[in-house]
Amino acid sequence: MYTQGLDSHGQRPVEARPDETHLLERFQARVDQDERIEAKDWMPDAYRKTLVRQISQHAHSEIVGMLPEGNWITRAPSLRRKAVLIAKVQDEGGHGAYLYSAAETLGVSREELTEQLLSGAAKYSSIFNYPTPTWADVGAIGWLVDGAAIMNQIPLCRCSYGPYARAMVRICKEESFHQRQGFEIMLSLSRGTPAQKEMAQASLNRWWWPSLMMFGPGDAESVHSAQSMRWKIKRFSNDELRQRFIDATVPQAQFLGLSVPDPALKWNEATGHYDTGPIDWTEFFEVLKGNGPCNRERMAARRAAHEAGTWVREAAVAHAARHATASAHPAGEAA
Ligand code: FAQ
Image (tube, rainbow, N blue to C red; front, side, top):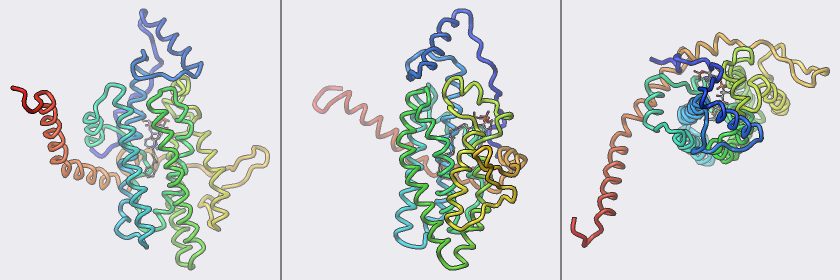
């Protein structure tokens, strides 16, 4: 019930029906030449399915991702922080809306996608199943979670599927502001009183490892990566992006005067990258199975919100129907 899409379908190699071989070759040639694939173009069924899976999971993540920070809107420490946080959480809702629209261009309805989320059939990012017990968590989410999201999403602006790539351009601009506001909260706390600095450190300790897990399983375990990279949906592997994030973020932690909670973390002169200790993949897969600290709470909140919004959806449908009747029979014309 609370799983995140355990009915995962491993990506089978794409096989063309005999009559599709030519279409498939042409499609791959277009992708290889970095041409954009648009909604009405021919595309292999598996490409369409992969995009619907990834884009909808991404949309669900944005929507569920409003909850951990939304938890702090009523308790933000100043009017300025409150206004910024409200705007940030609204941006995430907007990202969800663009992404659902991008998924709809592939022939799936928003209702179906919502149903998949609410029934537990669809996944959303593991990261949003962790709690936000202190204000510093709002800083850590902006700094680390939005930071990881940007690292993963900038390459998606060059995704082969046009509607997804275009949605990502605006999303990345907004995520970049989110990352800065998070870092600025962490900076204020780490330059504040000893108690504030301790709060920032505790929050880095909580969010560091889950942020690394956001990039998905290691390359050897990533079932979709190879095919998605051939299709140029993904441009870099999970491990490559994770390493880039680590290399960019460790110096930021040093600037804040905070320690990354990894005793094995070490700069490797030979590779030009940071080496890290092992990631606890058992924790990741438990979160995906629905056993993270907040999976049940997050799904319960989404179901309650959906329920509470029923009258809005009904009113919108009634309004659209009335509008359609009025334009079909303008005033003065006989019905
Ligand atoms: N959580 O074969 P791969 C954000 C699943 S938005 C849960 O490597 P793929 C903004 C994966 O779906 C954050 N499940 O899969 C924000 C697959 O299962 P399936 C979301 C995960 O697709 C900030 C299985 O494991 N971002 O943060 C995760 O090639 C602050 C095997 O994995 C996106 O969605 C995970 N972390 O690569 C909002 C970006 N990782 O589907 C509010 C777009 C993997 O077969 C506040 N997505 N899985 O049942 C992607 O780039 C890719 O889908 C990856 C996974 C990289 C996430």
